[in-house]
Length: 425
Image 1 (cartoon, rainbow, N blue to C red):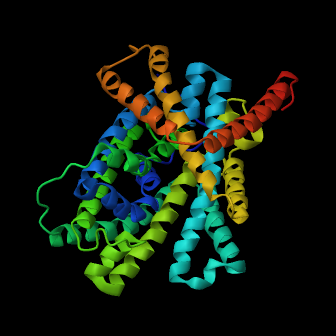
Image 2 (cartoon, rainbow, N blue to C red; image 1 turned 180 degrees about the vertical axis):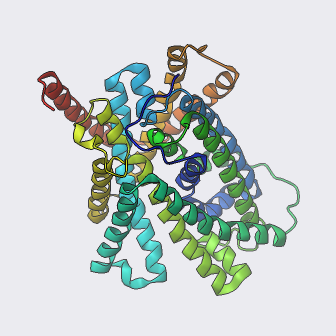
C-alpha cells in the first residue's frame, strides 16, 4: 500500500514508538503483582509471566501485520473502519478512546497516591488538585508542541524508570536462593491468577495510534511492537524470579518490589523504588496521552467527528484533540470516585483486539496481498481465543458501561453524519 500524505509532521521514529510500547505496558501493575503471583502459583510465577508474554505476542504479531498496511493514524479504529466501514470503526475507536480517557484519570490518581507516600502534603486538598493539573497539563503542553519533544521526554523517563528495575533484577537474581525443582501448580490456581498476569501485558496497542506522526510507520511500528513486548516480558520474568526466590516472597508485603529493594538496599533502596514507581506511572500517563489523544483527530479526518478535532497546530500536531483529552482526563481525575471504571478500559482494549484481528484478512486483500500468511495462520487463532477468554472474565457492569459509551458515541456520530449530509462544516 502506497504511503499517503499526512497533514501532521512525522517526527517519531522506531525508538519513539518503542518508548510508547514499553511505557504503555509498564505502569504501576508490575509493582504490586509479584506477591499475588507468588502466593497463587509459588515458584512457577516467573514462568507464568513468560507464558503470558508469549501468548500476548500472538496478538502483537497480528498488530505488527496490521501496521504494515496503513500509515494513517487511528490504530484499532483505523483497522476496523477500513475493513468493516465507518460506523463499526467509529464504535471501536470511540469506546477505546472513552475508556482510555477514564483510565488516564484513574492512573493519575495512582501517581498522586504514590507521590503522597514520598511527600504527604500532595495527598489531599488543594495540593492534590494542583498536582493533578500540573501533571496532566504539563503532558498536554508537551504533546501540543511536538511529538519529537514527547519522544525526548519519554526517552528520559524510560531510562530513569528501567535502570533501577534492572539493577534490582540483577541484584535480586544474584542473591536469590537456589531455585530447586520446579513445582507445577494446579490448573485452578493458574486460572485464578492468569487474568491478572495477562493485564500486565495490555497497552502495547497505544503505539499504533499515532501512525500519521511516525516516519515510515510500516517499518518502524512492527519492529517496535515486537521488540517492546519481548523486552518487557524478559524484565517481568527477571523481576518475578528475583522476588519469588527471595526471603520476602510469601510474607505479604503491600509493596513487594519496594520491600525487595529494602531487603537489599535498605531505606535508600526502598525510597529509590518508590520514586521509580512514580516515574513509571508518569511515563505511562505520557505514553497514554500521546496515543489516545490522537484518536479523535483520526476520526475527524474521516469525517466521523467535527473537523475541530483535526485542526493542526503550528507544530504539526492535532492540538485541539490533544487539549480536549487533557481537559477530560483532569475532570475525570477530580471526580475521584470512579476507579472501578478503569476495568472498562481493558474490556475496550479486548474489543479493539478482536475487531482488529478479524479485520486483518480483509485489509490484506484490499492491499492486494493473500488474506493469510504463515504468521497470521499461527498467531491469529491464539490471539482471538486469548482475547475472547479474557473478555468472559469481566462482569455485567463493565459491559453495561461500555455499551453506555457506545450509545453516547453513536449519538455524536449520527449528529455528525446529519451535519455532513446537510453540508454543515
